[in-house]
Image (cartoon, rainbow, N blue to C red; front, side, top):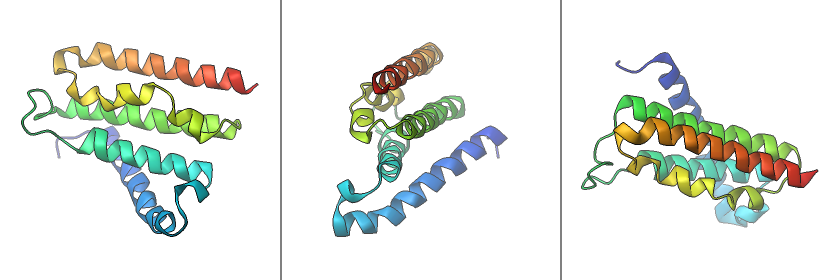
Length: 142
């Protein structure tokens, strides 16, 4: 009710990713994640990020025990951008293992611990770092 249309769209996008992950889990249990095509492995990775880095909260952590809608929206935007950049780079022939090895994943995982008053600036830096790392991968693939 208090969320914007953009927030609802991002939430729906993430729900689709989580649903795809649920469907892929059965295949993974039978034949293993390595047998999945790279774009489906990317879905699994982003779904893990959504679950662990966005949805999971630490009730006793001074920052993570509460998260404003604004911060939630920006966190979803960062995760969606990571997913979109991953899909673009996979289409250029870069392997998923190289994408998963990017250090930006660690920055995304720690986003929820950034205090609200510092989040805007850090979010801009995270997006810039993400773009740099994906550009670097694209340059290496040429």
